[in-house]
Figure 1 (cartoon, rainbow, N blue to C red):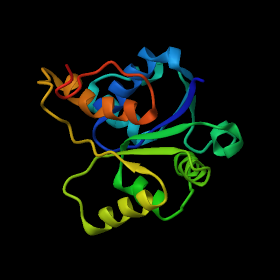
Figure 2: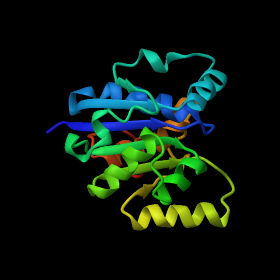
Figure 3: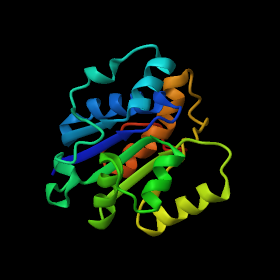
Length: 187
């Protein structure tokens, strides 16, 4: 059965992660029934600033406004399998950890957690303070997955997209999608 995936892009730095995630989800579209996307206003600004384009709007996904509580995934009855927040700001993490559903992203995260489905937060900040760490613990205790935007280097990435893909390939694996990627010492 194909996956239904929610992607939310917060205003944290790291638009390259969202772009590579969009590229991978489009590539694996035969495994996916639907991709629903929420971009914050800051996410659009950061994408334009960091990537020098507004290509996020060109992907073949369903886009929803940040306060559209009529979006199907604002309810558990829509049965989305996975939600990815990439990148995830510490403010978004804090609102999720505190159970504050003040926009579509935090409402959808609350729904995913209450339905015991998969919530993956690609947190993007350094260093962490104790509030960040406690919020990560709270989300983990609630069933979420913290997947820091900490790239690996053993695949010898040659550019920023390949470097970002070392994180996004882990996210794709966590979603349960078949993923053709570098595997450590896989012969």
